[in-house]
Length: 545
Image (tube, rainbow, N blue to C red; front, side, top):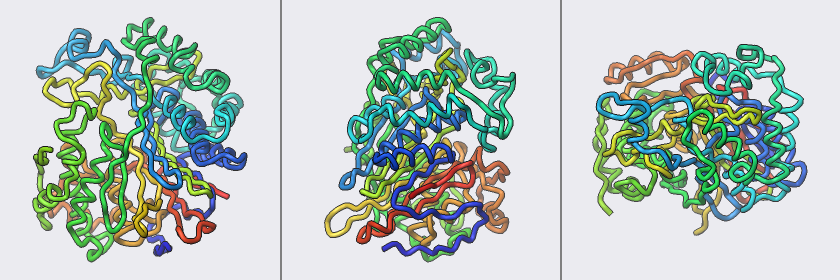
């Protein structure tokens, strides 16, 4: 039986939601789309796909029909992993980028926007794989809510409007962008009605012909033709050859539970490394929001990132395996590098040889889905295929241009990826039981959000909504620390005195991610259902029945 402290000590607009069937997303209309499938007799996978389609319409600033995706699915007895991240077009190489964009500091230049940032979109293939393996309702049914919203329109939500306006200066001149996302020559204002007929048209084709039409049919032909027209590298063969991959999740034990992530090319292993390091410390003996607790977590995350940024890539190119990076003895040795009183700038170790949306859904039969899809930097590349609503991601800028890097760009290769779904299980009487489906979106914030919320729930007994609402910190690439403005000023001063370089951030949406959490209340009494949380940093909703 779950024993949480149901008190929430943090300012919030949200309360935990209790239900036997739950969908939690960063946009209320998407959560309702998922619930519609559960009402129709569908399962949690059906609900997740419907919510994922709808959120492409109502939160286009974070994801879209040209996204990538990942998923963890608990089928009631076993956890399954899905990698639906895209691969580099066949024409890509370091020489390709050098010849087109020149050099900087001895390396080929790498564009952040435009066609040369676009890898093959994987999200629709992810829906296809999920539905084929677990779906219960006809695929076309799952797209009905999204089609309806796209055709009839929706009033733009507050946080979405804010991010939409912020993206316009960078993207307004990208091919096809203004026609779709600046319908009045500007970003829409809060509550303004927006319709997406191109999105609806594409979704109708997928509903009628199936998701492979995206990669082999008329939609694929439109994408490839626009690529040719704009001088892009993506071809019909690049699309036709793409499939999502079922993968074995990786995990690490922490406080009697196992935290699970998708294996590389994603950064989820960073959360597991940090948890494995923190397992060496008695965090629960320290006060929940104390400098001592926060410092240890920050240092563990810095150690994890030092290895993640050095080693993580497409697994076919990695110099070490995830198992080596998660080795208990190795993580114990890394934990010894932490000074409890001082901040340290860590280098990578030597393991022994040998703009995103996250949503979660769970049904009363025990199926739970942890799902994430993203265009990366907000709208992604800024490229939008005419008359389709397909806004293409910019995951290609996740590659390295350094020929010595395991993450160097190559044809058919997956880049380093930031988006990561997560899951928590527990061994009971020799069998694995589901505990929580969860995730926190937001670039490099994601593994850090996983770490901070899991520690709050498992070490401190904070209920999911409180763990979600608590102020967060974020380790940057240069190992400086961003802190939310709501973090205790005394704690911030103490962190500075420890040697941390601190930046205070007033905009939590842009920098500290947003999470959704569904926790199974009691394995012995399934009718109690779940408790769900939705992050107040976005427009989200946890809804159930």
